Amino acid sequence: MRKPILIANWKMNGSLHANQALLVRMLAKLRPFRKTIDMVICPPFPYLFQVRDLLGYTGLSLGSQNASSAVSGAHTGEVSATMLQEMGCRYVLVGHSERRSLYQESNANVAARHKQVLATDMTPVLCVGETLEEREQGQTMTVIERQLQAVIDASGLEGLSSSIIAYEPVWAIGTGKTATPEQVYEIHRAIREFLDTRQAGTGQSVSVVYGGSVKSGNAAELFQSPEVDGGLIGGASLQADEFALITAALADTVAEAGSLCGMLD
Ligand code: PEP
Image (cartoon, protein in one colour):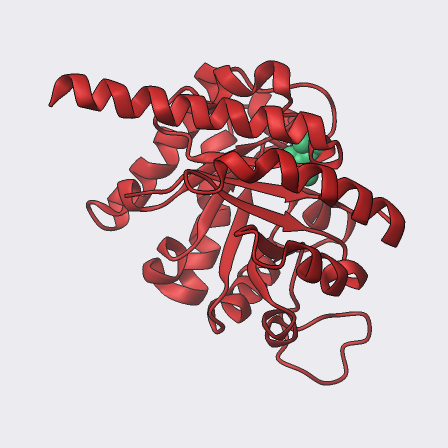
């Protein structure tokens, strides 16, 4: 059974003071949802320690925005997966589109980072998605399948299926443009079908979340499909009230799905 999950990606934002204020407000508002939804906060590296302490025993998890493809050694500016685990991280984003486009992380490089995360007890959150140009050329699933296959090549299907997959259309990240619920449904289904072509049944075992300009005003419709297991939230995760409303929207869809199942039993 896949548990719904929301992952807050703070990107390169925050300060000691701002993080504390945001989390104090956020944690109070998120308390009612802790049992139904897994929640993860991914701050910038220097704040991992602070956020870990503030999360304490709240039930929320700590995540990292990236991990090195190397184990250790002469890799100035990189942070290894084992260091992140030691800091208390339970999840690591890999292949975020900003890393792929601004820092030239190729599919093979992302797969190598993913492999390092897998070698720990942490869960990789593999971000995949197409640019607007690729979508307009009808290349969406070709691009995503290449991104998924690179991880299969490096870590096998088992490695990929031990991950969370975040479908994040590049054109929807930080732009205010959101994919329609139909587009999200279609791609989440196609990702599961791709996994099933590799091994029947794998598609339904993997959590697939959506990211791209999710806000309180569109969360309910984006999360309504049973194909969507939650969200990767950027900008809106920097506002306690917005993030709490998004969480409430996800909790509502979970409760609705539960009562529908009850009616069918
Ligand atoms: C992200 O950073 O992964 C993201 C989805 O950002 P935003 O919600 O701001 O589009």
